[in-house]
Image 1 (tube, rainbow, N blue to C red):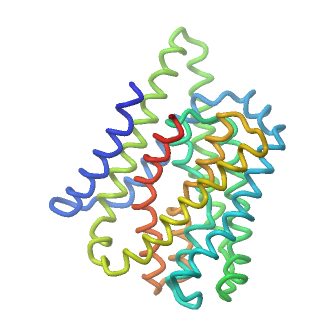
Image 2: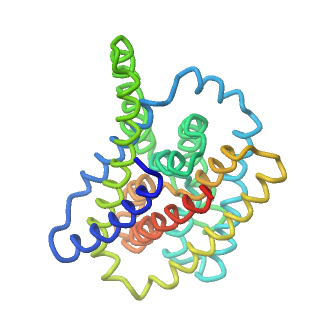
Length: 305
């Protein structure tokens, strides 16, 4: 698939998903989850196990990524959100929950599109997942005075069904295919299917959430301002960090993506458990998810340049 086709497909997915969600039919959230699992499966298929083991030893990059995601980014999120929103409000809580959690699924798809290092990004997935679950109560306590307990079941379910099982299934299929003569062709198919899965994911997210967005347009400017400024500030900070630590181009792209993509699906699930009546928090996460995809498409184009 030609590189210039990919952003066009993603933009079309946003437009068609929004229009069908408004004028035709709103699909079930099941399709979003299925698209995420398919995306991870096809990406993991082309990730060599030996490279994963090697990337674990890249302590410089992994350490910088962790500090960026769980020290620098949360501080930026707190400072920017505090400028626009009262830190005792549910709107502020929703923004913090959304902004402090790095993505553990579709970030791989955009890292691949931007020519980043998918292998080391795969190593970051479990690190980011565990860290954000453990640190989320700390962030809420420090930033918003709302101390909560994160249900371990949400973490365990996400780890198993959205990361471990797709990875194992992909590696089993890869092993079986490696015994045949079509391995090279299946790698090409998996690469294209990963892109198609990402396009489908964007379509399903906009289709199933666009109505909620249109019903709450009065809150959009405030939420949009915080998220947009957050994305711009983090982009330039990461750019300077990459230059200071002399990261390779692939590492810079990977660091930019892991600090830009947020983990809205998991945080939405957790927030529904923690705050079942706080629809404002759920709304922030949904709007953040809708704003994020155009940003990631734009960021992908910038990083490829």
